[in-house]
Image (cartoon, rainbow, N blue to C red; front, side):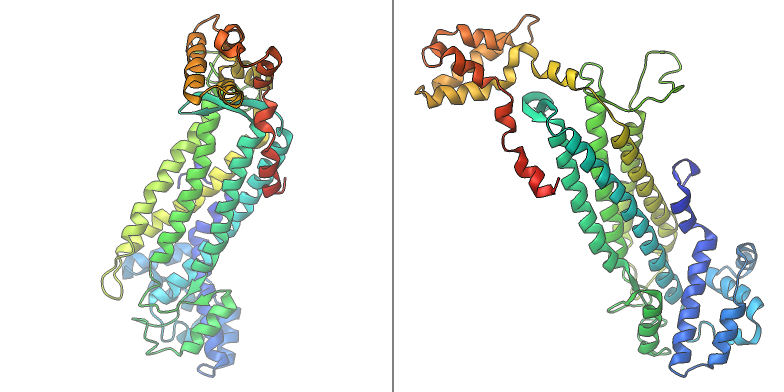
Length: 431
């Protein structure tokens, strides 16, 4: 992933140095397990742990000749360890190390993503509470519908993020899996107990039934879950973009001192962060196809998945982490304009209260079909007219006033009626 979207704490988990560090962790864990079961001398393990090291540049140098990254790594490690190095990688195949180490990287990345997700949850909780009673118009099909509150909108975002958190917590057990089962997964040259102990040392579970690799449905699940989270973040970003449009302007991204919106138009304050999030979500989702195609490997394993994962997994983790930090910052610093919300809600004389007028007429004895016709006529006469006023038209309509008093009509235009049950949602979310 390019540096522009790579934050240091996630980026370092996907460096060559960190990858090789996890490879060494796996090799040492296997040596410890082998020694515990009496297959290799404990003194050799002590020497391995004392001396084992690697130089990423030297590994690349060796790989250029041998054309095999794990062999290059082992060769370099043995340059540090000496004679005891003959016990490293005993009975293993490369994928024992690669897949188990990859699990360590994925778990570390997921933990960081979950930490960042928690920050977003707290930001949404706070803003949802702060704007619990900030009344605005709800929209369907992009058209004014009925009153809601901005806090209610944020509460919906919070509920979605909490579902994402639950999915990611479950995902952690799916990917916290290692394999030390040999060339085709039959344990022909390594005791299954070595796998059990090695995984225990590393905080993993042994794969139920590995071949030469851990089946890639697990990795596809990982990418798909992050893509779903990215899509949720995009939904929030798209909403911010829509609410920031000049003709709406109910919320706005924070515009810092000295920030410029356009090289040509000095007045511009563009929702660039939200637009960036939309674009990044597209990239993450595109990787789901590659992840799913990686599932169908030949027989017990081929290497077609490897090149894909070298790009796909770092990019997906790094971009998801960046998105979470970006949307959290957006939510925390969002500029919110209640006066504009009130203005937009009352456009054309409160046409958004048409259903309340309709239902009140029905309650008073008018047929629903007649009531709908009367109310729609008044609403459409007010719609898209500079001086259009639905409230005035309703008050002057003889069919309406035959059933409703002025006080009853006034009550239909009270937004509080639409908010009376929102506490139910807040209680469900523990806000």
